[in-house]
Image (cartoon, rainbow, N blue to C red; front, side, top):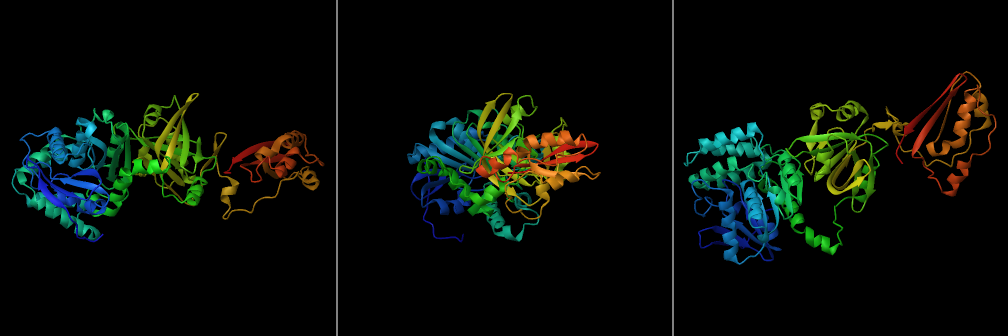
Length: 537
């Protein structure tokens, strides 16, 4: 969107806190990250001011706001925001924070939950792995409180890429301009806090009382999808969304996409009230049905992110679709499975339907291998759950409901995103992998006519040394199959056979005309064996 004339008010609270305000409606507070200022939210202000009362704050040490204490804590920045709300006479707001601002938003919601409706945490950090933690501590230790052009250039390269892609050049220049304006001492004090605050909420997110959306980009290595997924898992009303291809400054680099997710979350309660709880997913129902149709009686790998941000997964074939509106699917996991505690408490999971070349992955994820994900390539999905490369279809879900049933738990997922392709699915039946005959057809076959009994000529030919294969519906095999196999073991198939009972039931509509599975009856004078081949309905 091109810049448009936007009427906003820049003012200061009695404590010196500087802020921008525009629009009218329900209030939304925006909190920027380290090195930025309130004006970095201009794209969001432009898109929200026609419906919301938008307030963007200059956090302590940034913009025109005063410096923070020498050794600040997150609570110092949260209390600054509370003082601003008091000054503006706002009892309760929704809060959107980016990076360091996301940590402040969480602190605000934990410190004063009665003042917050819901929060959006963009590109937040959480429990950095050791190598990232060491790198950010080194950068913090190098800050002197004086300007550092080299450090600013390294920051731009880290956030946008080196070199910066042409399509991101404008966003990078805008971000660099904000970095050049920041008070060096305010930046240094705040960054030192940012370097050590990634674990401040590890033991407190379980008490977060408000709905929380954790969004990051799939290419943000320092505020990774695993971090957002782990936070969403801990927050009682948390949800994770990963924007494909986006990096740390996605609110500036992809403002339309990022703001759309913010707006959808802010409007969620209102949308539910007007639609009796049915939220529009934007799905093409026909395309969604076709994606579900990719599943045979086959094999899936179900994935999620564990409490420490680690990927977890298991093999399952207990998958089925539940509903098109809302889009629901389910999968089952045994209580005795090692991953049961993780999946039973997860906020999201992904179901990956495997293709024929993924037999090895199926076996590994069915085993107790210590590092199952070392054997597969994967990317974080919309919810942060791992999506396996090459899968026939994938359904990325929020946990809708957990149902206990016997010795299994049923995970019912509301599909947030899905994808599918034309690859051949991996089938599984009676302990063996198979390739269903119907899956080998290049085009869908015409609807079959109602089945009838085998002809007498076919039966007579079975007394020769040649093998004959008669394909029947698994449901239709019935008495004819059992008697045929018994007689085949004596050297011949029946020459005459009355119409089997299942033929009339097919025409009467008590059995689907299109079989859900096919069975091969293979008979020879000296042997007879049966092979079940699973296929989709």
